[in-house]
Image 1 (cartoon, rainbow, N blue to C red):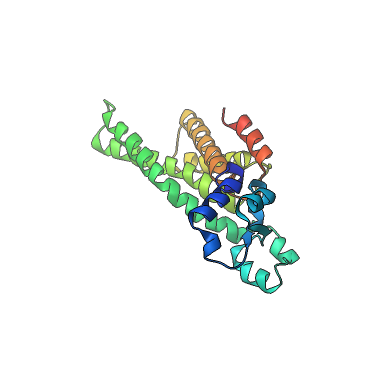
Image 2 (spheres, helix red, strand yellow):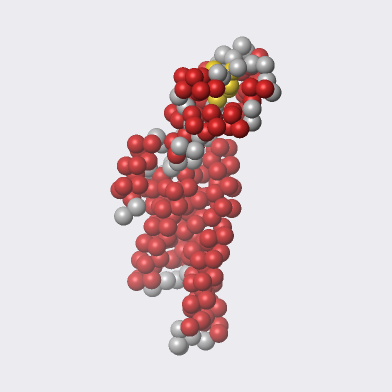
Length: 225
């Protein structure tokens, strides 16, 4: 992700080597770089500017010790990129917590608006506000939790489409449980699906090994409008 966005690459590595005076602290002139950082790193440029040879290490940091012990040779297992349930669950926790503050702000603002309806009683306003909060939470939950966890089983290839499907399912469930009228049900399904699709795209498209840069650009071009 960082390599694709340009925040981890040749310039950043060279900058940090010089800022920390790395050459004066170590005897070796080799630098182990994450395998997935390769798209943003020009090994020859790093060597020319710093004197450090770039060695592409394993995919996961936990394998670095074994990589060094093996003579800096990566096994097939070290080179294998996984995005299994455990990996997706880790992203779920990070992304859900990160977006939770936006969920709370958006929900409270919209819920507060419900108190200004002229015909609203206190009980009706509270009920409407809670309904809105649950609806918004459903959208966030579908986009940041359901989509990544159910990734292999949701139809489609892009995160946006998968988020759309998860959002539609969450929207149907919300509309049914909250006994929405037809117009309200349609509106909520469209809203929850859209928010879920957007969150799935922006949170996970660039934060996983599931997509590539050209695919990400194509997906955003299609789904953001």
